[in-house]
Amino acid sequence: MVNQYSFFPKWLQEFKRFQALKSQFFIYGNVYDSYSFPVNYKEANRENELTFIQFDDVQLLLTEYLQIEDFEVIIYFDRVDGLIVKSSDSTITVDTIGEKLNLSKQDLSYLVGTKAKKVDDAIGFCRALVNNEVKPVACIVNFASLFTSNPNSLDENERNIFLKMLKAAQEAKTVRNEQKNIIIFICDKLNDIPAWLLLDNPLTKGIEIQKPNREERARFISTRNRFFYPKIGKGEARDDLKAILDIFPDITDGFTYHELGNLVTISNQEQIPFGKMEEVVDLFKYGIKDNPWASISNSLLSKAEAQLNDTVIGQTNAVKKSIEIIQRSRLGLDSIDKEKPTSKPKGVLFFAGPTGTGKTFLAKKLAELIFNDEEAMIRFDMSEYNDSNSDVKLIGSPPGYVGYEEGGQLTDAVRNKPFSIILFDEIEKAHPKIFDKFLQILDDGRLTDGKGQTTYFSQSLIIFTSNLGIYKGQGGKKVLNVNYDDDYQTLSTQITGEIKAFFTNELGRPEIFNRFGDNFVVFNFIKDQVATKIIKNTLTVIQRNLDKQHGIVLKFNEHFIENFLSACILDNLDMGGRGILNRVETHIKNGLARFIPQNAEVIEVSMEVAGDKVIFS
Image (cartoon, rainbow, N blue to C red):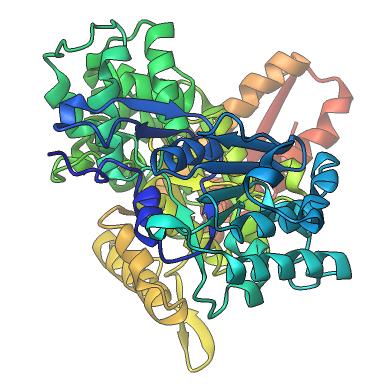
């Protein structure tokens, strides 16, 4: 004999256990989902004999279940549809229910209000019904969260409604066969109900409907697989069902039943075979059929290191490690040591090192490399998220709060560009509450925004940048932790050590540091030879654009770069590439702005060996 209730949703199993013990239930949580339910559970002898029906409304499922459990009268009420009576006795209707259950005239007076859809009268009528001893009655009252806008500050009418609910729980009778009359309230959250109604009340029970767990998701694919494309007949078996069963519960982690049902629709609509379930799930999550990660060829990555070194000058170690991590992510090796698929981000990089060394620039170039679009990098300057409400800016305000309609800056951006590089710039400047969101992204690969929508990060490459480690605290002051002349190994060790100290001691969140793993990429100081290359590249761009925009030929004398480096750059190399560009702007771009109006066709730029002034002629 099949276990009668083991195939119920978990919340309904809990409801069954307390059904004879409590007179009032508050069902809350995932109440707007659809639900799979074995309607013939009392007759089936084996699991394969069960007939599962999908219910798109929790009250419809409860009504079906309560009828099977021999409740002879089921009452449903909400403020839109009013009162509905359903009974195994066809003679019991709204008009005859008073006579059939021996209700008093006072009790029947509430019916007038229920037809007008008044909550107060509906609760009064339910109170009378559960107090009857003629037939087992179950009342279902929907949208209980709307009974008040503030459960901690009730007006007189609202207080009266909840007091009636309390008295109904106290007065509910047990009819025959120890069948207790019950009232079920469906609400969004349990704290939408006043605490005094629930606290230490042995007659009430709150039951949360959670999203389907791993076992329930596995059961879904076991019972519904024949509906996927191509559809097969009842009783037929799919050859690849076992393989899909191994991955389906993991790749659908966090899905509702409604979303699981959507996978069937997508599979048939797009004619994606059941055996390509990961493609079906990705299409649902991201709305994109072609995965850019899959189009990255080995030949592209083999050339990428040399190409990046030509543009991100002087950071060979950083470029090499970045490419290694991307290759690992592309091949799915980040989770190859896991028994089950994960929904974590595609990859994680932590760029650290001196200012102006190319951390943000490399992130842009990686976006161009992977997604063929520099705009595929979504950048967040964490200095803008340093107050206590910063987490709300990222994921959006909850319903009823200012800014709800605007959505979350992070969740909306990733939903629009799921295949992207997400750059969190200078994360040490973020408010500590933000790090909880980072932890959730790194662990689960998803965030739920203020509107209840889930955003997935499992196709994103997450890059954090930081200037941590250049300085360290000492005696209440900031002192240099690294020196310009340090070799790369010393620089890397000193910086990562100070970053660990920040997360462990100052922030008190060592678990976040651990989530970065060995993905720290330390950038080196800009050295003399690198500075020379940056100057040459910058001047070449200026020459090309000056000719294109103004028709002017720009020439530099033979020793200009050498003299310019010596006189104007070397004292500023600790400011990195940005410091070099600042000096180019001051000495060259400003000079051109003064000289160009003279309508010269050729501009020659020189600099005296021992001087510090750029000469235009």
